[in-house]
Image (cartoon, rainbow, N blue to C red; front, side, top):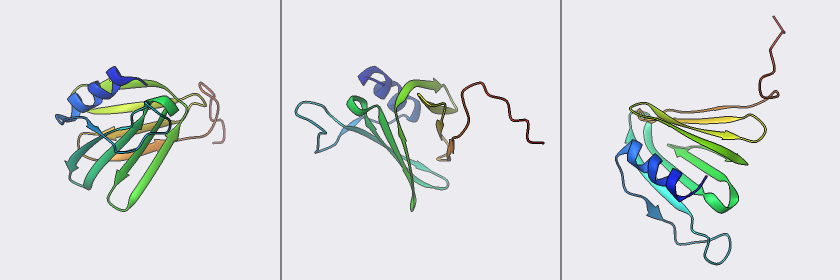
Amino acid sequence: MNAEAVRAVAALFGVEVLTEPYEPADGEPVFAIEHRGEPGNLRLVMWPSLARVDAHCGPHTWVAKGIVETEVIDGLEVIFRTADGAMLFAALTGDVLMVTGGEPGARDESG
């Protein structure tokens, strides 16, 4: 994740990028976007230097670390993929979903 990905996420939601008043290290900004969705206000805090995203919606929070890919699907959602295969989805509707577990590409043969 980089500044270009942060701008793409903000454009998806039609909001401005905010710069947080704290940094994990000198000169390493933390960015946020805020979006009003049906389930509640969505706030995505993006830490490019830490490859981390925090998603806050209402009283709930999801944290994804080790982000290796950010995919913006115009008109729908953003997907943050981690090195271990987890995915954090944040939709324009304000819905947030995190999928974890298993190896990337592994098949579930439990049933």
